[in-house]
Length: 323
Ligand SMILES: NC(=O)c1ccc[n+]([C@@H]2O[C@H](COP(=O)([O-])OP(=O)(O)OC[C@H]3O[C@@H](n4cnc5c(N)ncnc54)[C@H](OP(=O)(O)O)[C@@H]3O)[C@@H](O)[C@H]2O)c1
Image 1 (cartoon, protein in one colour):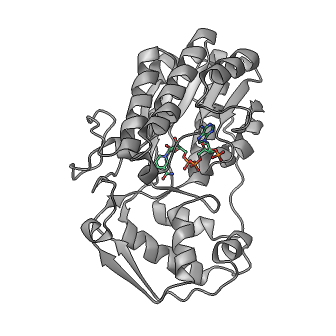
Image 2 (cartoon, protein in one colour):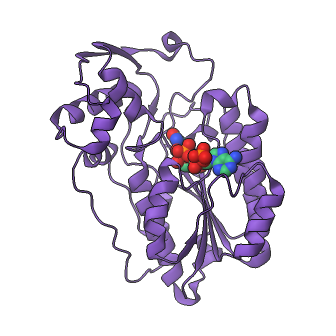
Image 3 (cartoon, protein in one colour):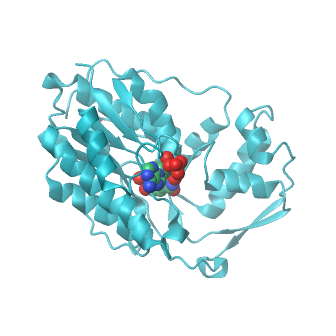
């Protein structure tokens, strides 16, 4: 079976990587925001009814965490209402919905890795909208995979990696929050893991994912944990060692040399963000490993790979055996 796959968010960090990988598995229909604005319910219905996909991969989201505080209605339309409609439409045609959510559904009060069974308690508007999206998908009864990830970055887009590289060309000293703990996850590795899982689902007997058994919520992040402060130091270290001819690096630094010499740890309080964020949001990936045999590399290894001129080429697995 060559499935039709509807992919949203193809211009995003994760969506652009998926748009590169998913065509190895099926016919990908990837409307841009101009063709499918997720704030427009009619458009969602129209695209779903015309495309009749077997698989829907929703990589689109309202991800501006600070802006969501003052624009919760848009965050909610894109992150909760749109997934609800996608789920209802997918259910009607028997499609599987693959959706992404966030570590920010948790309040960070825990001191050990969060499990899928831990109760969410989002601290901010973005987290609330994403949790509402998760709930809507579960309530719809559609066959689904909800993959919660964290601290996503890529060599394009808007993210911490590119911010640190830009600031690193402008300031000798950077002050970075050192009391939030999480797992920075590279969109490349996230997309590869997702594609491996989807490849397995497609290759499974009758293409059905053993869907009813394996459907559900999974944590999907880099292995290991760190703080924004340690992450920033690692970024500058890798950038200092990397070939300066890397095209994404040149564009991140605008061709300017890195001048940052010191990274100083500060507290969340000193950073004075208007948005509350969890102090600890490390997610256990054990369930993902048990169900699909998939693990993502350690965060430091993922970061190092970004600076390597050659990245691994995706090879879909020949067969998939649900565990
Ligand atoms: N970024 C993180 O740190 C992070 C952390 C945890 C979980 N996640 C989750 O991981 C997933 C992927 O995130 P990401 O970082 O790849 O996001 P991203 O880079 O911000 O990309 C978001 C995508 O959604 C699209 N989009 C936003 N509003 C839309 C609308 N109204 N209609 C249609 N498309 C719209 C954007 O299109 P335009 O290019 O046109 O704006 C873009 O393609 C999301 O579910 C996110 O919640 C992200």
